[in-house]
Image (cartoon, rainbow, N blue to C red; front, top):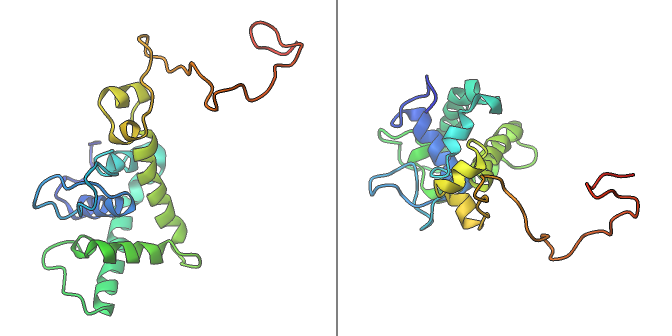
Length: 189
């Protein structure tokens, strides 16, 4: 965890984990895990490192994460009150919502016309990115560590020298004929 990041039990961390888990659900890490709803038997965005990616300064989100978490909890409290759902009872309001309610709230927040849509979509994209590409760590390191998203997608391991090479074309055939003036190095003449 980067220096200055909230601890794993903080309201911010638990809220962002619940957000990431709603975007790309995973398996519970422990029976009493309330942030991860356990809607999958496989690892999801949280285990894939969504919070690590969100807290990477290169995303440009790091300084705003406390406000995103607080705003998400405000929306969750309003959502719960508007539907007569029980109070959060010690849990962050978004974490306290049932998975279906978390999903409904995120669907609303990311809907066309919602004034905050771009913020929530951006957070969701980073959660997906953590799973789909392990953008917060090098690809060879992610593969070696058994990154759940890359593993699920069957991402090829690097060669012995650590370089990723593709021995076959992705469509099983060349996509275009080489220009007749192409040099042996692949450069145009």
